[in-house]
Image (cartoon, rainbow, N blue to C red; front, side, top):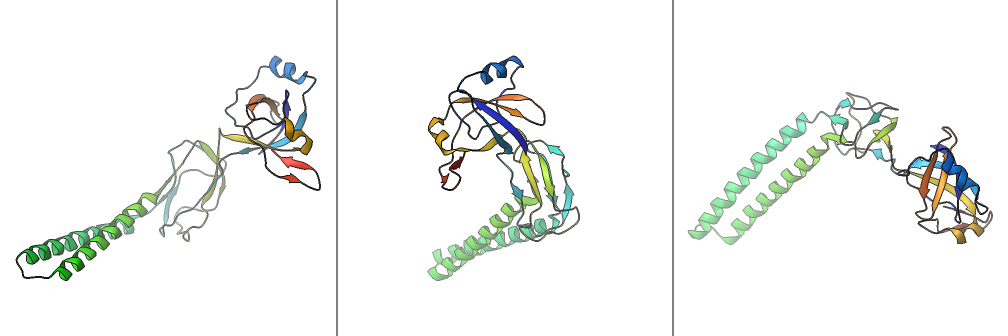
Length: 231
């Protein structure tokens, strides 16, 4: 996160996206001179900061990014050793073939009058169950690689290569690099001026860079004690 100061022309603060363009040195000065401009402090945060987990019980074969490292969308963040699961998938595929042959055999026998309808339905149920088990394992194998859902960086890493983490244990926390928002607390009386679509300017304290942004939404609750609202 980073601290930011924001100004508005005829409006107040909101969640903003980081798709804004950086201003030249002259542009923000003109906006700050407006008689109606206001200033607030807020925190710049990533919109997306998920914790990655897995429902696989398998050893980790490699970690694609360490804490603080950046990555591209689609790159491999965590890869598991899924050889055992692939063997299980092959066994399930054999069971599917076996139950399919049994079903076809019973269907032939019932046409010949040598089997009854119940035998056919039991054979069909076994075939459908085997097919469902195979599909479930194939879907599980899709989690052998955890791919980056966006461009970003690793905030926290809690797994290491060659360990077998418990199912659904947090593996790493990642954050998006180009989708940001500002969270700011304003006085409740300022909410009447908040209108989605209004343009603002915010300055990052750490870099002193100024950026264009746009009001997207406001919070829906007012703190009765402090008479403030989150926007």
